[in-house]
Image (cartoon, rainbow, N blue to C red; front, side, top):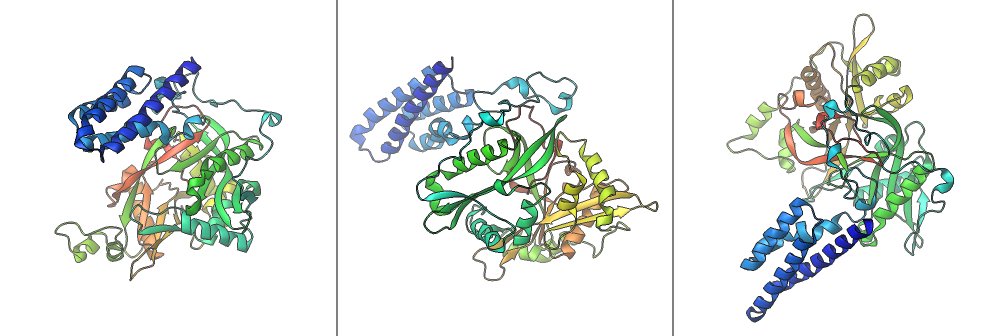
Length: 489
């Protein structure tokens, strides 16, 4: 059966490649050759339909493309080509990985509503897709690098190497589609992100040029305990996959992923969690970013937002104006003495979500104790000395590119928040005030956990894209955005 399936896939891909060439060539053919090209396209499309094995959506796309070919509508053909020819190749690497929805593992029975997942467990859920292996059964040698490149472990505690990481990410990591903003992870932020309790240097994996010794690529992982539905698992949080722009054609990213997987597996861990702004096979949940304007004039001047029709700058500033000080009495920065009680509060709150981090007290202290310019957290304590409310955000700024007036977009990102004695909306309004008082221009939040409760009332605007959550090598039902209780940097 596997061989037969592979044969269908190979034939499908071959026919799709032929079809791609035909569509591209059509743009430059003479009118005398048009009939022959149309006939060849029709034949290729009919071959795709007859083969079967494709999804219903792809079959519909093939049929639509067939209709367009018979009508000679080149513009419609180009729009549909990605669904027919490109889809098969788009995830050539990820389709080989043990992910929830890979084509060879897809089973509609796992697409259950998370609300009944724990009461009616399916025997296929809540287990590894690929069983754990003994250490001697794992690949022992690192994966091969292309000629001229070699593996290295990057020491984040070394000033020079930390600067190398900063430079690589700043020049080659996340940038918006319009080229106006680029993430600017500070060196202190990178130290915080990569040195939680139990971190391992061998998980800070780099690729250097053999000739210049320059850092050309990076992938990192840090340890975390994560609960997926009722199962707690030691996992790796994978982040900062970055390849220098000049090396994108070398196909280094799949090798980086396979090598970090090999290294993590050698520590006895076989699951990982990560997020991506693009849709890859196997996402377990999808969340949306929302943005709350704090400094209206600056955000308009840098192009982050714009004035709506019939909206003046004065009216916009009034719309987003906040009080000068928080309203919740006793809300103050968290201190080391607060950690045990705050940890207990937050961990208990996270139990209600289906995908959540399970902090140890030391991990909670690392991730949530205030660090200037990195993370801010606040607690409220009642008269009996019990911490009842908690809010936090981390600082991740972006460079503003090509703007004559501003160089930096100062952004706060909602982290973990628990409201017991006030409403979550009231607590988060105070969080906005605190962030603005720290010089933030915008406050960002995902619609995970219970954040839907305050987004509209506090005038957050919906962002452009989704953030996909992935759990590597774990079989479980997909879930809704408000089932997620995990924030990754």
